[in-house]
Amino acid sequence: MLQTTDDSFDGGYFEEERSSEVVNSRIGDAADPRLKEVLSVLTKHLHNAVKEIEPTHEEWFAAIRFLTETGQMCSDWRQEYILLSDVLGVTMLVDAINHRRPSGATPNTILGPFYIEGAPEYPNGANICLDHKGEPTLVRGRVTDVDGNPVAGARIDVWQTNDDGFYDVQQKEEQPEYNLRGVFTSDANGDYWFQTVKPRFYPIPDDGPVGKLLGDLDRHPNRAAHMHFIVTAEGYDEIITHIFTPDCPYLKEDTVFGVKKDLVAEFHTVDDPAMAAQYGLPNPFLLTDWNFVLAPKPQPTSPRDPQ
Amino acid sequence: MLQTTDDSFDGGYFEEERSSEVVNSRIGDAADPRLKEVLSVLTKHLHNAVKEIEPTHEEWFAAIRFLTETGQMCSDWRQEYILLSDVLGVTMLVDAINHRRPSGATPNTILGPFYIEGAPEYPNGANICLDHKGEPTLVRGRVTDVDGNPVAGARIDVWQTNDDGFYDVQQKEEQPEYNLRGVFTSDANGDYWFQTVKPRFYPIPDDGPVGKLLGDLDRHPNRAAHMHFIVTAEGYDEIITHIFTPDCPYLKEDTVFGVKKDLVAEFHTVDDPAMAAQYGLPNPFLLTDWNFVLAPKPQPTSPRDPQ
Ligand SMILES: [Cu+2]
Ligand SMILES: [Fe+3]
Ligand SMILES: [Fe+3]
Image (tube, rainbow over all chains, first blue to last red; front, side, top):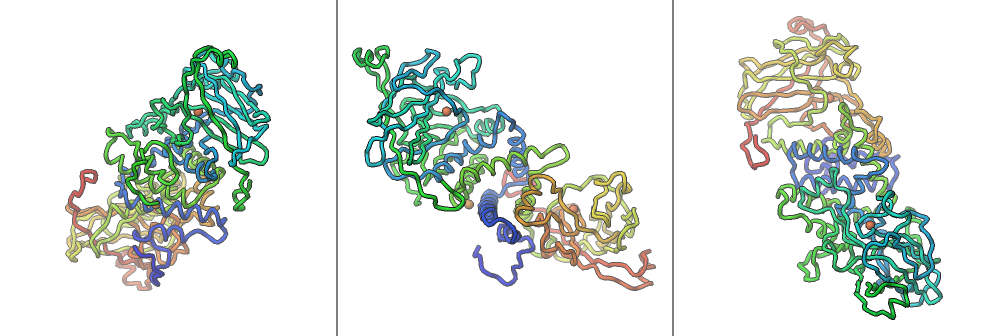
């Protein structure tokens, strides 16, 4: 319906046709302008969704129940609303909006719940796999700026699942502390390298309302196999990202939509005893060549997004 | 962005531009078609809202926290998500969508949380005010069909606050049981009449996250003063509605948007000792003339909305 400045509209009484206009007209002058903007936009799209769906009273109440149960599933160690945001692609969308980068720079992806600060700092070449399970893998590459100049002294913080698909923090009894976590530093040429094992896919927690919804939508709860990275260097935009294995059955079906095309790596089998000996790996082994391209730190663009 | 059937789109990897398309493409063939429709529409509008808002990570997390706290406020006697739906106008919108009536029929409005079944059945003329507080009021009128023909034997279930702004069920110690509740039946001419007192505005519960949001939006928590009615008659569409007092300070600011223009009644002061004596009221008193116009029972229009 046309949003005219109709004289008969006093913004007070409910009307189906201009329902969100009526609701938004109530926001008072003392409200924070950004909150007013956010709530007005949410209300407009929510009302448009309801008008398109035309829910029955029972469907509306099913939604109320779902939202309530999702909140009640949350505890100190479980955030079901973040899971909901994840499986609806909202977490990735917010991440993408906040990390638009110049072409060629390594894209961001979501942080995920398993990062911990304080992982051991290792020299290049060290092996972060402390439980000796899985396929030995060499990851190596260069950190550069967008013009291809090497960035020395960049900090590369990596973490991943073990070969059973669990992070160390999920299996404190079974896995060594800091298993498959480490911090490396790029050398004078911008190069870094380390030993690890191939990561494995894993499910998000699916025993709550969000898992039930996934099931009802005929979706599975699995994340595509990945290694997490945070790469930082003075003067550059921090990169929070993953690299993905190319042959994971869930690569095109990551349940939280974390996969971007430019983040899929190669894991080649290398049969080269000399190279294996050079890096201290068994032969054959997997090789992943992966460069990180850092964009300059963005300038602050709005008062609500200071860098 | 144009939604073309681009060959490069495989529905798997995340892309900011077609984020909701990527998410919705994951719904499996075994999903219930209505659930698929509902979630696809919700996801589309939610992503559009996020794209318009461009939330920072902190704003996104504030939303996660709000949704979590709203769920955790819910208990057996408190439904904070229904309150949220109410103050965003969604409850009214769903009610309006499900109760589109022929012109001239009495409009629906929301049921609210204070209805109870089993109120006393009274003869016309009885007084439902058992605590003797407030301004004596005569409510009288006729129940008709949309052509103006009287409907005899219609059941008129009424409930309202007392003069302090509380329902009996909110003050079980202070108010008599079934105070300001009663069921009347229209006579052979379709007429009904009863004695009550003028209802008073009242706040919705505002000590939780929804009340905090209202405060942040510079909105008050008050409902415009009203009487609730459920009117039923064999063969006619049930009416769940209110009538509102015309001089309530919150008439144009009902916090749940329950007021429709056609539901505002008149409460005239009548100074007429003979009429007062006829109805057994003190003189002067308030008079509300109010007719209910019943629409025929709608035919079932879709398998998910049987009548
Ligand atoms: Cu929308
Ligand atoms: Fe992960
Ligand atoms: Fe009420």
